[in-house]
Image (cartoon, rainbow, N blue to C red; front, side, top):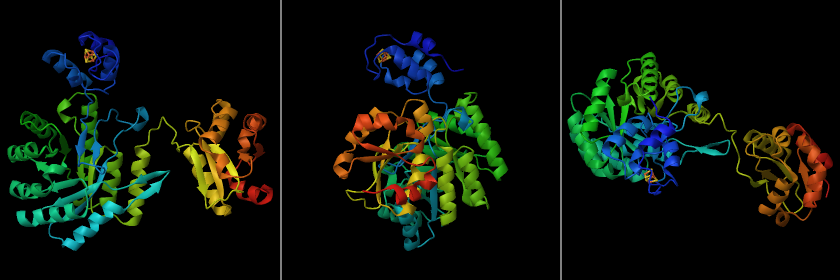
Length: 444
Ligand code: SF4
């Protein structure tokens, strides 16, 4: 059972020395209670207190990092079963698979696709995360060569999928220092796999269709010094996967079986129903998902779904406040002010683009609230507009002093005029009418 902040505080040394990075022991205790800090940060805790606190305050699912550098990704550290209870924090890595029997050109083409392809949605660049190389040839030499080809073409997190430690040893020569994920340790080979993972400081997948076996493998690997684990439930069907991944999530977040508190791995390529498996994996707790390279349609669907599921439902999606250009606006172009609620931004942006009138969008920070809500909540005010005009140097961009505000912000028009000295024009309430409005009303 999780400890409350005050119970945790009682176990702390209460030196208030700030060495943990927190100003007081109490704030550190509050962080521990929320699973947002590690007991190891306090150097004055004795082993007994550490083990009591560690068991209850560490995130119920361990954070596991794969790869190094800009494209590395972290999975795990989740706290809830349902997204609406709080949020999901770490989106699954979607990994394209190549085989060591493919030609260099074929492998390089897949790697370059993962390296370069990106799809922008609601202001975020969505990308795939890495490359899994599978040793289907059975040859250590071919496997190492395929891994070398991947490494020569991009710095992407690698996943090494091989049964033989000889093949993995040969491949780790190319990427051992880039924190690849090794797949997979089983009851039969875990000692050798652990030795490799420990030697290179890599995370390790443990694989079994039995949860009891996974628990004992996790214990053995931990004892062998490998703590960054990922669970492959070896599902025989999609039904098996949902049952297994949901059970693991439940047992982990309730801390009923702490040894299952690791991210989950899913290889969709063996299911025969790849798109369905990918969808289920994103929705139902897979953290590392291996797939064959996706078609353009499946790419958009998968990346959009992942973005939607891993967006915090408690926070409106926000745009960065600033001055945005539609087309190539000149000094006489209209300036339209609106809020930083992303749906407002993208709706208005779409209508402005189709109006073909170059203009500026001045996006002010209403903490992601829509126009109507921001006006009602007092988040959209004349001072915010005045300060935003100054902050984003709007006066240097245009020669006029006219500001178009959203129809729903009309109650503020007089106050904005007074505060800014700009003439305020009240635009339509419906963004769909903005093109017609500009064509009729915008005159310099
Ligand atoms: Fe308190 Fe330990 Fe943090 Fe020092 S390091 S402030 S003793 S919790």
